[in-house]
Length: 384
Image (cartoon, rainbow, N blue to C red; front, top):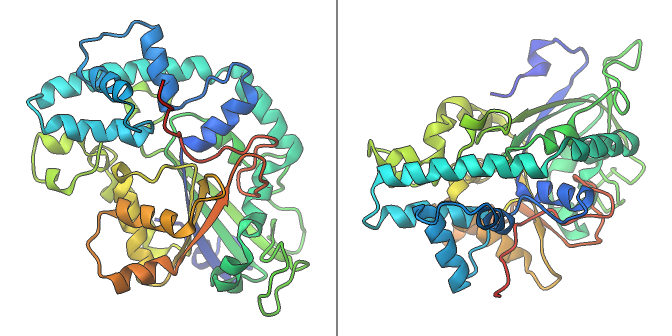
């Protein structure tokens, strides 16, 4: 669960604590690799498929066969979530669970080699240098409310819950296997001082209204003297621990089946045991760089329940063109939750979701990589 810094009194002067859970997906890694690699080799599903072909991967691997089939049909399946959904599709055929597990194990091994080739020490060092120089991590934590449209900002409750001497306690749920985001959000000594003042413990400035939109007494000059804490988890594994890399699906019908539940990601990640308690007290959720697929619906369902209780709100960053409707993004989240609900309930949930649409060249505070802002999804490959 979130550590309660206010009640534990290990930091003096905290008036209120805001727990902020941020889900970070492969769109972030893609944006970094696009900037720091000259060959455009990124961690997308399509690039991994090309890598398997280049390496002459075993053509009898049933998962690789499914990847080739989808590619040849050009059926729009180009996201990692589509690849994981293929596991569920294959389990409904004559493929045995044992054969599928063996195939997945070989794919995981190749994916580790793929990551090691594209996330080089040179990439990490260049990113590390730019983060320290530009203070990207601190900017993301302090000014992300500036990314909201005026309409969404004026509807949102969170800004008015903030004030001086509040703790902003961030938990980043990093669904990537790499350390690129960990590097980005790490508060180093060049951009952060843990205890800068002699008389108070505040160490952070939070901007509740960067754009100066209408919001009672909060204006663009308002800056709260605050506290910040940052923690990052990798529920699906970490590149430096090859055995931890986790691909899978999420199907409630598999929970009671001894064999099939082995393909549920939340089973191996021990999500209920490790992470369920975090949802007890979340002020704000943020989804960033994710395709919001149903294979991660354990996380989406729990977030949905918090929104339903009207104690939390959700910001979704979505990379797209200008024609995308925000309600479509909200519905994408609802669909991924796999929850049966009334129209009234769904409408209530949507009222607590705020969508930030952005494309290449748009400037956003949250996780901005200078000159490259293609953060969300591993877009589907074009035919041919």
